[in-house]
Image (tube, rainbow, N blue to C red; front, top):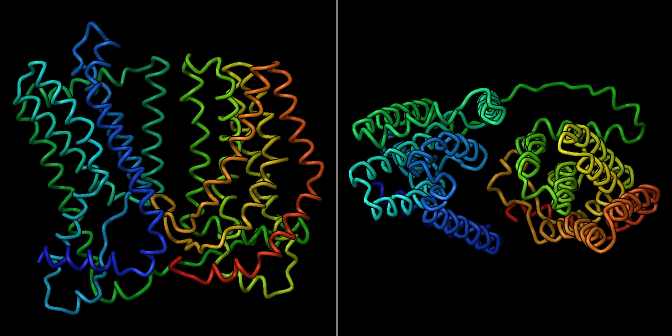
Length: 489
């Protein structure tokens, strides 16, 4: 029966209407996944020597065990956004004489072969091989590796239970940030607490029974949960959601743009894909901690410009690059009404402007790392307001692929085309190139002044730029309407 299920899934994949249309994207994503796996394999093969060099007086196995808690939490956090439960078209199966248990076991077992479960294998198998070559006991090393694989599968099934729960995401993020803060400020050594636990899996092979028991419990919980929701009426009936009435009366102060703002805010909050973009943007406020805390990046002002543009403009990039595809489901209806296209674009610009200002205020605490960091972030925010907003809106006129808003943005290439890759060149590449050249050839002050001047000029000519963008949208109106009608594009 399992082989029959696999064969049905295989035929469904190649017979999909969107298979040929998205073949290029699939090849690109496969290449990126292969590159990631090769990189992790190389990391695992050299990890022993890296740890030996960083901590010459300590056993590399002990050093690694101290950091494994962060690996597991980060992997679970990554899975939360990226991994989806393997599904199959179960409606025809439910009306046939096929036990539900077989369908459920197939779905759960298929998740074991997910590419996300390869991360631990391709990283720690080479590391374990090096340990064996160095003379470590084979039984202990293999049991330790097996325990890591079992914990990876535990993360796999735990993710299916907590996935898409905002409370679970908040708790997971809180734990990650709290552990980092406690370790960074010397309040509590998380490594010293969890290090002996993971080292016990190596020193005492019988302890592998603990993660095995946890894995069995999580598998059973997933089976019971799916069993309770797997029935024909549930498969056929759409999910019922309570309607939430939100007046957003405060938007009326924006006059003719108020209806568009209300529509955008409701769209963002009520749909999975757009709401996730907001949380991603807020999360990337902490992105600077990765670089500002490292001495190697202290004098790399070009990197500071990248961080400034990226952190203050993350929502601009994530949300703005898919304008007007967010409205693709009803874009035809909007264009058939007496709706000023200019006001529609102004509302998008206003929404992105507010996001840039909010993100800038959230980056102000980075002044702790020096006044240059604050100055660069300020200038980058102004550049985003004056230059990148018109640029992102202009490139939006080339979007012709439909977006389904109820789908997660992670691992989902729907609505993606070459435009989303090309737009990053002027949005990110141009300011970094201009600033780096001027800073290297002349001075930091001139580089800052040029970016600031470009941002101010862009804002001063905002009306003219929006006129040009509006005309571009009007010229490509029918091409966009035709593209948005293709649901499998």
